[in-house]
Amino acid sequence: MKRIIVTGASSYIGTSLAEWLRPYPKQYTVATVGMRDSTWLHKDFRGADTVVNVAGIAHGRENSLNSARYYQANRDLAYALAKKARDEGVSQFIHLSSMSVYGMEEGVITAVTLPVPQSHYGRSKLEGEQLITALHNTGFNVNIIRAPMVYGRGCKGNYQRLRLLALLTPVFPNIHNERSMIYIDHLCEFVRRLVDSSTGGLFFPQNKDYVCSAEMIKLIALANGRKVLMSSFLNQFVRRTHINPLTKLFGSLVYDRSLSQAVEYNLYSFPETIARTEQR
Image (cartoon, rainbow, N blue to C red):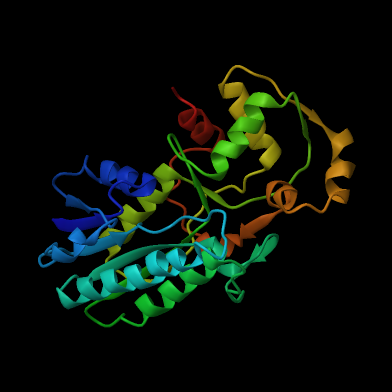
């Protein structure tokens, strides 16, 4: 039986992962640890097989007043947690990082693409990765997951912005783009399989199919009993308007499929993931 500690006890991914693992009582025991205060320092990690760290500050509006918080949470705290896990005999450490370490708004990320983060969030995540990876040894396997956008029932962040568009807009540009994303259940299943493998390395899980923003808007609207008119007439306006939020919405940014060849953790089709996300 694998003994697992999940940090970020009140986070969306942490809560989802703990719930995902609980139906396997003969395979795993799961404990959650909060990281918002210093109580985790007094948690005994001895006897645990795996620590899964999903705690940290998410990508948000950055300014000179809050920049230090990203490095404290995503780099310093993550490293201290990994070091504690190693020193107390944990054999596997799984750390959730982000696609943001590449600093790209558009393009295809391949095995030779170098990370060049453009934000405090991305830099803090990359620096955290580097410190944690340096702890890897034959008795302490480090796993880094550079996740793309995560969505699912109850999620926050970018998905909710797309959902608001789907519920309010009567018409949407019919632009075909491609984005790497991952449904929460797929991410949780990927982590579960990673726990079973007891391996180490750098990983890029994603949905089997790339996501088109227009298709996502359409499916969210349909799941809520609405119809959104997809208009090619608006495409030229979008292409000529160089505004960062529009680039993120309509641009293409993907992991090359060769980075995520094994997709057995993909349990549902993309339309099914939206239907499940929108269930009320």
